[in-house]
Length: 403
Image (cartoon, rainbow, N blue to C red; front, top):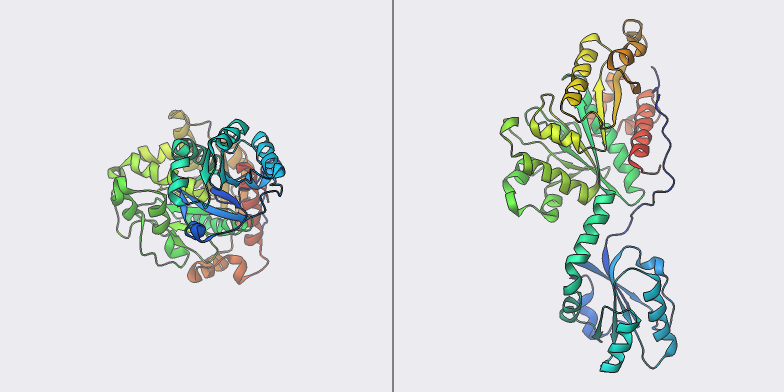
């Protein structure tokens, strides 16, 4: 069986740094007193609170505030080192700082504000005092957090040249591998099945979801990140899956804006989102492709499949979204088939290179689908597994994810 043919070089970006920590409110206190116990596991301004016990004269590394939306720093006005620590930290970070001190007099408050404090609150810190101090910053903090999430959000749409070419099996197995790699780096990945009539991603992954895309649609304006997370089903690999509705639905009758919002919200929550699109085009599926960071066009090495793939590309051009990066994937590739239709013929017909070929190993893929497990779990080394690994590396590189 043939190994994957990677025609486009896949160079992993070296400048991208993974975001492995949730955005939070950081508290640096001398110790946790009885009045501060309520802070453990709590949240303020919509963000979780993390508490670090550190003497008020001990230096705080600015890097420790890299993922903080705000930080509360205890100061000891009787200790010059403690006061200097706050002043220097405020000069080195962009993170909003709130100073905390016991019964702070007005003169101390003025001194700390001049040093860079957004506010000064009394110790022991209470939720109410913290919420009050952060209230003026809440809108700004939320916007900053959304900006960070949007930077990490990546969308990969999967388009089939025709039905029945194993594209869903391919993307399901690829998403498993991608999720495993992302989780190892402190990130997540999600697979959204938007094939509203024939989608069976959940089935192919051996999942029995309690909720589906239909629940998110019916949620309407109540939909938020927490509800979306609660609606996903987690595969043992760590991949989060939003299953297609249990019953067939008219694809044109779907609320386009709401579907787009679901995918956007999933990208904010999980980082990388793969979307398995229906074979037939709709206004909302075209909109999703237009918003994609990458589109995978899956085809087979047959005249009919390649011809349909060519028509798909022409449609994108006619709709003014031909500038989306498209990578062509030839699935179920077999050298024997290449004698009739060559890769060079595919490239000439499509007017672009074939980025990847994926080996045809029907038995291995079928066994993996029947068990809902990665192909590597059934066979550690295989041409199919090697192809999926290289496809993962290629997509990661395209999205700026390190491998």
